[in-house]
Length: 287
Image 1 (cartoon, rainbow, N blue to C red):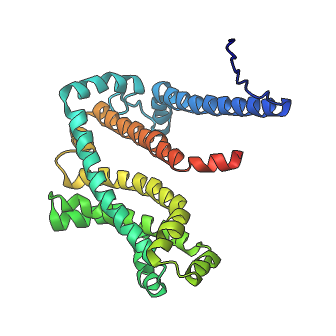
Image 2: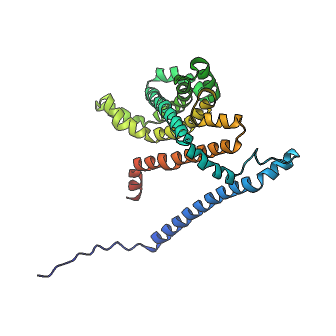
């Protein structure tokens, strides 16, 4: 009895498909090339030329201690990590933004969904505008004046700044709901909760992710700003202490760490979950 081996050969790609794949690879390589070149250019100018440029603009030699370069900042980073302050400060800041933005996300989503009710939309519209236009510094100072160094002093400004952004994005999604589909669901007697779960929420998913992305980026900045005024720990607090003691190498180390970590959360964490959630779109597009 002879064994029969089945070979599953991949279908041969056409010349057009191979050309498109090659073009996509080349475009991706160019994108990463120019992105890396952007970082190299900025850091190179900062390290070797920014002091001379500012010196020419001000008419005097700029002390290196006033504007340390990237290499000195890299040398300072291990000292901050070894002191234990790095992880403690980042942990405190992440806890604050997690609590504050979590409350804002729940509140903003609920208000955005409730704008399906016309009188509620009109009732809350001006409050959303105020929340969007008011600077984060105003809410940070209000929180400091009312609650001081208590937790509500930093929860309040984060919520006030980010909830309006979340609710406005979701309200825009509500306005773009397919009215015919909603009317059809009502005509067939679909319960309200089922309409929300199977029609409204899937339609609002892109708006919710956009609200999370922009709301989190704004909340991240407001959290650090709040820590500068009304906190005794966190990244903002460390920036304030370093600037007051004229340890500008430490100050810029905290600033760059803040930027790098914010980019990591945005480009890696949030985009990963977004790709996983909307993976079905790619399948539909290639079907």
